[in-house]
Length: 238
Image (cartoon, rainbow, N blue to C red; front, side):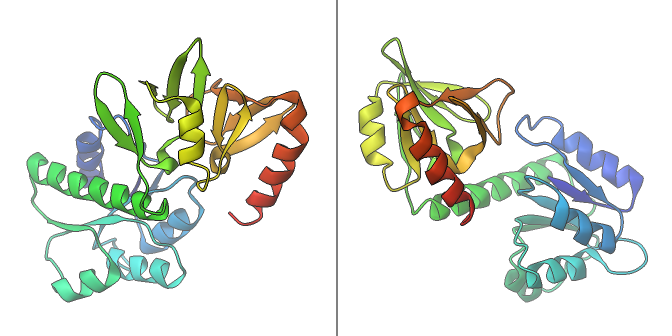
């Protein structure tokens, strides 16, 4: 998350409202339009923004957001404003929600829910409209982009995401068949890996761009050369 706000008190308010969201991490802050453009362009793993329409001297938040859109930077955004612009302007730009000052924590939660739903839908469409079922005590779904790898260990199937691992009763071979067109590869008899999530490979160990340190999958010795070659080719297109 990036926060663009030139008022320190308002920035602290936003940080306080974001604190309960364990899955949200503030990776950048900006107080001017130029800082917003620079940070949104350079910040790693940026998936959402909250920007104030007024950012002191120079470009405002909406103008800066427009420049980012023209440069091909499309980041789901909540706009904070004391006076809402005409709906047609923000609709054309793709603003997810507009929150007018003064706002309550309840109104902020509504905006965050709308933002999360937008990101989920965006992820769903980018995954080709595919959900991955997870079946244990209850049934729920993730998109392929949510999953780092699927592991079979002592007859237990674990679906690993950046934040946690979910037990599933679906066999790894069924997942392999289901995800064959989504860049998942059976790197080892016990590991089905999302190749798009790999950060680097060291010997027989696969490390991931997201998730807790130490979380890794394995490559079978006879598959190492093919997987490394395939992953290197895939990186050129990502």
